[in-house]
Length: 314
Length: 314
Image (cartoon, rainbow over all chains, first blue to last red; front, side, top):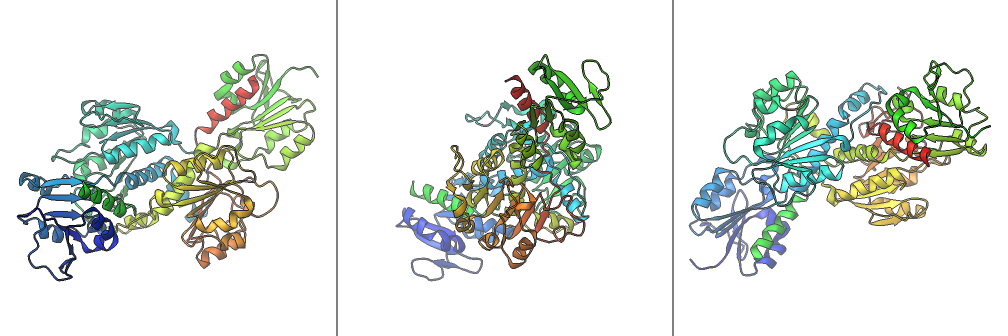
């Protein structure tokens, strides 16, 4: 193999950010993939033997939950593959583990903090303000004001302090909340956090938290939010999961909600996705279901391209 | 009259913050009012002739929109009255003007910024994220993710830069929005604002704003949001009014929403309150009606007592 760079990108991402990528790697050959075909950008011709050295899983490939299997099949068996950069939030898929075993460098973009923290903030404010009661009042033309909780009086426990969890913690802190942060290892940057909580102390501190956010990767099959975890939560508290559905025991959660703690759960991720139509989560009065959508902020495409271009240049 | 202080407070506020008030004015006589009777705190006896020198309109008096007329009637004709402190958001009621004409000092607490900015933030995020579509999806068990706008890409125009408008501006800025601020006079503190917009330039700049927040007092009967104002707004924009209903021409607003700009209006205040049952605002698909409730954060009671006690001490 020569040291020539052959970069596989989605045709959609190239159409939007081609200038940026060319500037970062002027000598590279770009292969533009769509589900129908792969085009060599230099010649405009269709490529039959797709053997990239570099592959970029851009954010558009994940949009709408269409799956990236067709794109992955274009690089996964390339003998020349040296580097895969993924603009998705989690690198905990087994595919990436297998690539690493083959000696392929795997990198991920940290571009999901802003939108996921805004999503979590909206859901937390919605809960603290009982906004659902105002919406119900409008439907019945009922003028029924009510008192609500302010952020300043609340305590948050954020589990997982990577780019996403760290951003959630800083956003809650900026609005006056007291934030406890937990991660496997104590991060060097604890800005916005009142306290670091080690994993084995989480159960003891859950009762202090009004809002508990799961932002930890699922690196093994272990369930984090099980019955003892739920039993330790405060009665008025909110559980938010924007990480992986496998971290939550959904059956135990429904029982815990029925028993009164936590008060509410916001679930953007599920053990099985799309969430099956017959799941009792859909209609439980204390569950907010969203369709794995908290990462879909419109700034992710540009941020993802900027991060990839920066790494490409380096 | 002696210089003795006779302070009229609500019995409910005194029950919660009496210690604080006593510490601030140890020599004062406190009269505790409930709708049924007024009690002298020192003697425990009912007071027939209520002639306070100081009256505190605490936040509990405004809760639930029950009205403060019964409380105002206890001090409004007191010949000894020197000072009225109100823990409400607006001092634009004619009652306060009349007191000022009589030489009574009128002060207001600045305690509504935190909760109203959190209310506005929730409504803005709800709009930017199209959260209503996710809620509708849950009702029909539809797994339908969608892209949404992040705060970082948005421009806000906040009209009125007092304690409430200033706080809204800083909160939006902290989450990445570009904030234009407008007030009758350019404030000395423009922190969080990208630019000051003078009142006569507002119409020219409305088209730049994704979110327009009305946080200006209604000091005269003039309508601010009229047809030319609405015509100047951007098609995808959100109008939020948390100030006074009289500032918005509701008929013109409905016509503007039907014509496509703004895209949505969040109204917490109305020309007539409670909003009449037959108002078309209740059922308009682009209007969010809330019952003059954005100030009802649970931190206002303690903040109000602290501000009054501080002034009492001084």
